[in-house]
View (cartoon, rainbow, N blue to C red):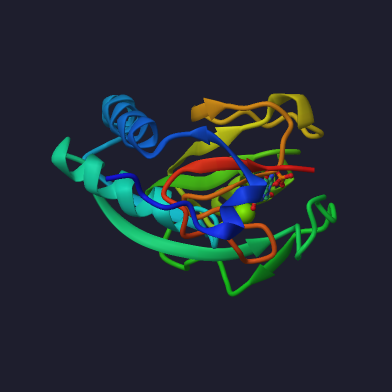
Amino acid sequence: MAVPVSSDENQIDPLIPADEIAGRVEELAAELSKILPAEVVVLALLKGSFMFAADLVRALRTRGVRCQVEFLKVSSYGNAKESSGRIAVQGDVPGDLRGKAVLLLDDILDTGRTLEWAQRAVKSVGAESVTVCALLDKPSRREVPLEADLVGFKIPDRFVVGYGIDYAQQFRDLPYIGAVRD
Ligand code: IMP
Ligand code: MG
């Protein structure tokens, strides 16, 4: 039976179906399990990476990597489609990262500012190592020289939503990733 498309999805062009995301998350976990120790602290940047983090930590556990899960709320977009260029941080970097192997997760690597800031913040509290993983990467948008250790999908410069990613707080609940039509 066909699943009805809800009316707000008329503005979305599907890009990455849910089963492709699930397959890629398993592959990322397999790759990460080769480079990470048996215990890591996952630091997931909110809100966009909550779904990715939820799936990835379960896939990591089945491959022998146990995750302590921490979150940090960081935003640069407000409700707009363009980054403000300024990073707003709510809360503190978790205090017990000294000597830990940290896996830093974000939904999208865009200009690179957010992950560059977060990587520096995690190092500054004495983490032993920081591995950076982003589900999506828009390489054409990079403004600071940050590369993730692993990315799920390289995508063109379009504004995307779904699988945790929002436009003005909408569409995080879509199970697939799609681009908002201009
Ligand atoms: P950066 O600091 O410019 O790399 O921006 C990364 C952040 O911008 C991500 O964590 C996202 O929250 C947000 N972002 C970038 N591109 C998009 C998009 O296409 N849709 C929704 N949020 C985005
Ligand atoms: Mg974000």
